[in-house]
Length: 268
Image 1 (spheres, rainbow, N blue to C red):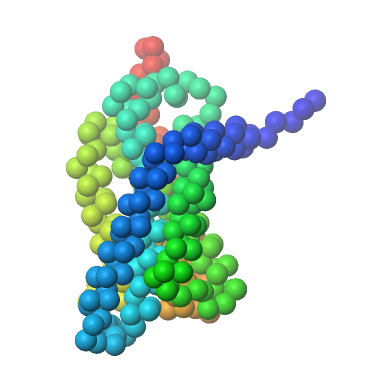
Image 2 (image 1 turned 45 degrees about the horizontal axis):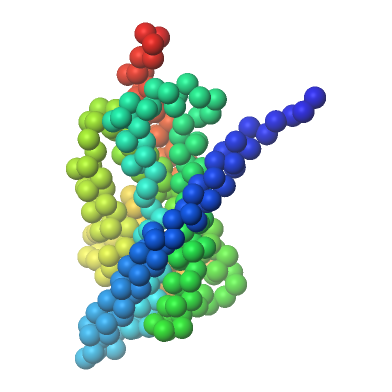
């Protein structure tokens, strides 16, 4: 008797999403061009800021450029899946999806991961090489830093995905989540360290950020990359990310359980 792997169907969904993304060359070139423009803007902006000074908040120009470039590349991965869920709810497709032999949230996460893997291979890695070659950003200080950075990035992306699912689930009650998404993007950009390093913010804000999940999405991974967080601190930061991921995932499942009670399918 053949034993079926329950995760296989989600793996197939992930691969399908990668194939779909690689089919649209225009999106690829448009996204690549947009990132190149942003990289150039960052370079000239911070070069102008550092024109008459050697450091800003204890960060040299090289450190700042490295932080901002890595943060820019990571910022692309902290959202996305909630839009699809909200669209299904608004258009009524959610009823049919719930009748299919898979968990809808797991399907959305699998396809979102596939999209991000595709994006990383086609855009992020080439842009990272471009930034190393032309912008002159620094490489990780050691192999350990690189490995910890990789783990931290994965956890940060998953945290962002779960937070985005919360926004999508709220569409059960609000129908239109445009305002919520705008608020979410503003809060994440400001509080995650994607706009500027959190170390440049007032001390009270830095302390408050330690009790919020947003810095786990950008600031912690980038700080591990640059060496601002290293050694025992890096391992503790990753452990904190893991705890946040568990807490937010449990919250998502709880909200999902409440939300699907609002749906009546064929009178059931």
